[in-house]
Length: 298
Image 1 (cartoon, rainbow, N blue to C red):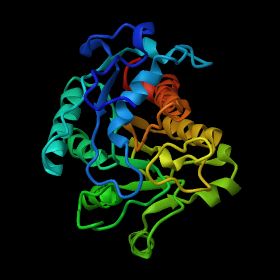
Image 2 (cartoon, helix red, strand yellow):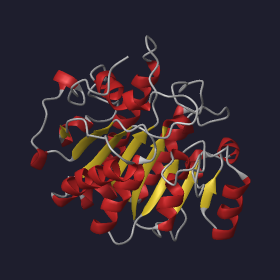
Image 3 (cartoon, rainbow, N blue to C red):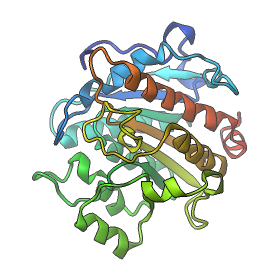
C-alpha cells in the first residue's frame, strides 16, 4: 500500500506534462486526511492511490481529451494537527486555486475535507449548491464525540446555509431522516434512482446555477467499489453515476469537485483505477458542457 508520505505524482503521470498553474483548468489537490474513521481505515492512502492509478488512464476518454484543458497537481497537503488545523490548510489551498479562476479537484481522504473546500468556495461564490453522491446522508450533528466526523460533514455544510442535493443515499439514521424531512433537503435515494430513467433526471428548478460536486465513492455499489470504509449494498452502477453527473454538468456551472473515501486495498487495484477514472470522467463532462465551456471560456 502506498504511504501518505510518498511524493505525489502528476495526475495522468508522464502521459500528460503538468501544466503551469495559470494554464491548467484543473488543479488537483491531494488531501490525505484521516482523523475520524469509524469502520474500515485507509482513506489516508486514497489520494496517492488515485494519482498512481491515473497513470494508467487513456488520455482519450471516448469523446475528448480532457487533459488538453490542463492539469496541475499540487503536493500532498499537510493534514497534521487538529481537525481545524487541517481544514484551514484545505481552505487555503482551495482559495489559492480559486484566486486564479481555476477549478479545484480535491482527492480524499475522509469526507470531512469537503467542509474546508466549501468554506473557501463561499468566499468566492455567494450562491452555489452542493450535489452529494453518497451512500450516507452525513447529516449527524456529532458522531463518536466529534462535530468533524465524516458522518457530520454535510450537516456542517448545511449549517453554512449551502443548498444540498443528495444522490444515491441508502443508509442514514432517524435523526438524519427527520432533518431531511423537516428542512426539505433535496435527495433521491438509491432505490428511487434504480427505478428511474436516468435520461429524465433534472436538477430542481430552484437549485443554484453553480454547483460543487462531492462524490463519496461509497455512493457506488460495493460490487464495483469495495475499497471504502463503510460500503453499503444497493449503490449506483457506473453508468447510473455517469448519467447523473453528465446531466448535472450539462445544466449547471461546476465550480469544483471532490472524490473522497477511497480506502485502497493492497494488490487489488480496480477500485483505485475506478476512482481515477471517475475523476477524469468528471473533467470530460465539464470540458464538453456548453454552459461550462462558456463560463470557463474554453
